[in-house]
Length: 122
Image (tube, rainbow, N blue to C red; front, side, top):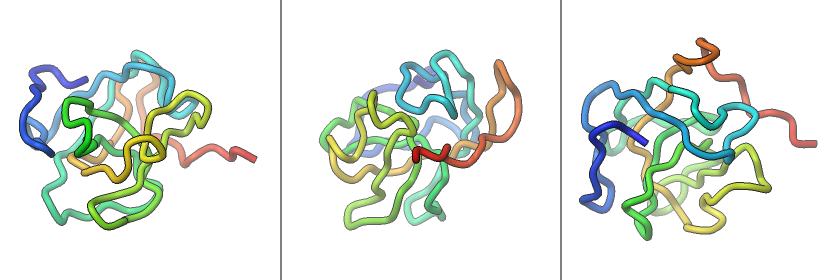
């Protein structure tokens, strides 16, 4: 959730160049946990996003839903994104391609620092 975020266009941009994101839910656990605060940078259409990046995205079929997920690959219509917790996540497997609107730069609270790479899920 982003303070001041509103439902609007199909892939509404983030409200500023840098935004504070509050994580809600377990879909990115253990990398990101419920209640974490993240700093994200707005991604403009056509901006660079690489596989493995943790991003803020919207699904065209659910534009009111703003999610934090990990990029798997670029696909027609956007990016395929998935949560790090495959047992508790709504991601591209449920909603199809996502439009990336921000790239997470760092966790600010409670464990400040860069986010680790995707955990080995065996």
